[in-house]
Length: 435
Image (cartoon, rainbow, N blue to C red; front, side, top):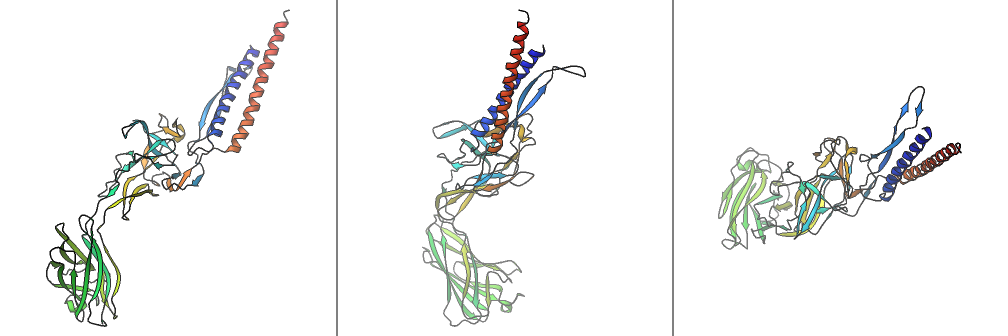
């Protein structure tokens, strides 16, 4: 019985070392696979009889030890969409089941991965080298609100940035308290109509008296009245309002298509005009800052006009230029007009027991009964890892360690074969005793 038990035990040892060889082979083969997680081998002893007076050989079985929670080395990549997770968590991904007629269908089973070498495919989806589709929270293009209740494959379909007509011009400048001449000083700004066509608006400033100026607004492309009108701007005590010297205190008489806001301490000092660039009336507000504030338009000492900045909120049409990822997980589409639009935000998904996830093809995992439920969080929050853009996570396999394990497994396998051979010889000797 002991000889048979020894043989059976040695055979189970051979099976166990074979499993170890298999896992080592898998690890070595995937030592350069992005996002791959090492699988080690755990040996478990099973007894037949073991007590104070007797011990009979049992057997050994193996189970895999997944290292999903051990991070691999983060390395830089030239891929602008390459992302790595520093810390806990996984990228949520979808697995495509079919692609036909330009339409892609996906498996209903959520999957997760650490392989972040994402690129844009022909259908506009972000896909990694294993063919898994990156999921994200959709972002409302108008409000910028992130919908954290929905998680779907990220697809870039907005290849055109629609033009935005100018509604506000913001001016930051200093008018000279003692101008060197009576010649008006000017500022020009480019504005856009509803079709995205550019037009020039000129602001001419003339001093009427100390602390009192008139601005004349002209839009040469206005098909109705290129000379939009004028408005009076008063500074400091001249305005009759209690504002500091050199700050806008009142907006006076307006002419033509021009209107002004009334004084209220700390409120916006706005001059509005209505232009028609051939697309119908378009109201544009010239923001001079706030009443009584030293930002926006001022009148301080000097003899020359100083323009600190002039901007407007209109946008010409633009076409798709590129797509980029941010450390926050925001996926932005960039356009040729210099604008960008956030289309999705990538969350980081964590599990209470990530080593219990079920391995799938392509360095992907699915939840199991022991892994816990997936919890999606914004990157870097609630224990989830942070995103490192422009990097990818390499395999966490240590080649030197695997070679050491290979030598041990090889010697153990050889030793078990020797036990089998010896047990067989002893059994044959026992049989020959009868002869």
